[in-house]
Image (cartoon, rainbow, N blue to C red; front, top):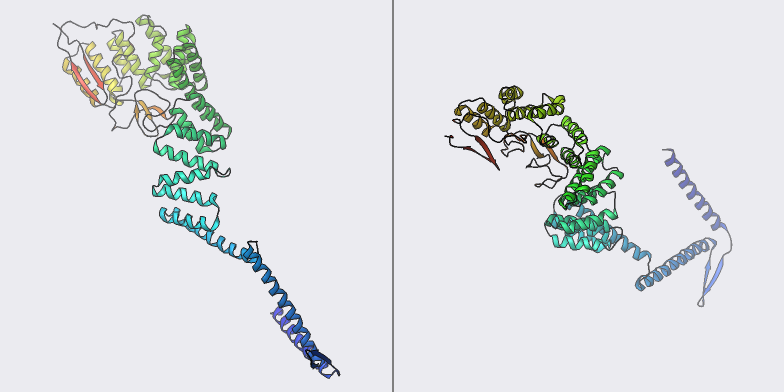
Length: 490
């Protein structure tokens, strides 16, 4: 309100001043005579003032017109001028509008529209580092892989966009299944941006698939340094890689180097079952039974597993039955209630032909946690105690439909594996194997369901009456189970 009043007062004062000045000029005597082309013009003081103002305006307009003419000449000559800047701003506005519309179309899933807008934006902006990326992503969305790859290759020419181009082509090759080229591109992308987490993961997975364990360990170390991996997870995965490297070295016949690598893997992750088993066998090969026992006992306490028991039996393969029972009790004393311990002790008592003790060791496992393995053991115990064939056959029949117990399962895709591996054969994921019970719908057979797997150095013929059935066994092949009955011995 006050500001409006001030402006009104200022306007009134200006009008008053001009009126007063004009009045004073009209009362002034005299004037001026101007001779132009032989004609005389007599001007009063007031007219002289107006003529002076008109002259000033005319000079100003003339200068502006002259400036416009100069600018037009420069524009036609190709120089940068206000006119060219105006047109440039107009083109830039249209280009950014097209780019924005293209990004919205890409986010909306309209690939063809996004490509059209990208072409329009490229026409106006002349900034390929922006428009090429939009074009490539839109081409991928529409399934035009050739255009996408060609566009990504254009990004390789600029240092600022080279990583984006390499990454885009790498993903193209992964989709096509060309893992060799994809791995080379992943290494290039990793060299450009060592801290890029996605590139680290892809390179690590490809190196694991190609069995490049040394390279994978370097990538894993870089992932730890960049903060993309917790230290405990790094230690575990480094152990997995060291174990895989040891297996390859062993396959090449380099036993000593394989032992050292296996021992290193066990040191990095003592609870990694395959590493502990391989390290223990390395110690057994060196004649160091004490270290082998220590390694296997430690991993058994972490997670009992039938392969651990098999390796533990290899420490003293020629020992007697009673000595074996005594030695195995030192392995199982801290996990007496575990199902694997119960089955292991039952097998050992069966090998000693102490069937009542085997049944006590098995306990109520066949009722609380029935599996194909413990039901088969129960059938063996019944046979050893002289039960009728129908009783033995009943236990074996139950084993066919019982759960198969823990197995090596990929936690990423739930695929079941017969043996442990660093990478999943089904989905290619790294370090996802877990020893656990599969879903009830799965029917694949677990490792370790063979009858009496730990009978080492014992007589192969069972001490049974000659009129008894020699043996009934569950033969497990793939996902089918077949009961094989042998004829009665005469």
